[in-house]
Length: 309
Image (cartoon, rainbow, N blue to C red; front, side, top):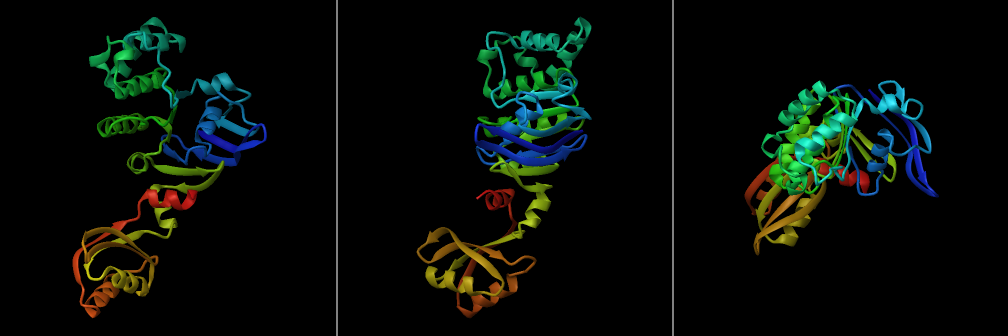
């Protein structure tokens, strides 16, 4: 559905995208991650034909974005980071305007506006001026304009930026609902949203792709699939030293303090190693007390930091 081949973008002498290639299949939700300035928005602006590449090719359902720009753009709905809204318009006026400039007939406009209002949950604000809407409802209106012409592809640049936790969940669920029928590229800084929303992830850093795969695949590739948290009663310096000396331990971090001789430690084992036996023997040998113990999977945040530092 989307194919990016050897995409490069320069502004003057500044290299923003460095020969990147990837594809997105029909019906897939792709998470596009990277630190500020990594090249995410630049890539999206090239895919949507706002900017031209310095070199390389973008194919949208077989159409070249440079040679067949109008045909390719008809297949795309785009929500930029700054939502393009006319604040003096009421919601229904704005949606009607978007339908008309997308070339829908009067009958199609009436039908489609009703559909997107239901899909995006805009019924109760339909007659409000856009300037009076909350950030969450503005994002909903932005999504509504992006899907008005029933595009096959959605490009969403930071759609949850500035939202509160409840609004983030609402927009995430809305993207997942829309994504059942669309191909979606979705950029964000909220890594938990990627795990909850996306089928596959691409991580970009300094204009290059540094990681790709499903969230679970990326975590396995990082070699840090599991972390052990343990709270121990014992002298901090001694405990930390002995834990670090244990067999098959990669790192030990002091995470929190409950009392003068009670600390929580995060232990990262070697790949595929179960540390529980080694840990219990070390604790008994040194006459410490374990007050809390848990195992957790390494998060996508760990992988992101590792690949972009």
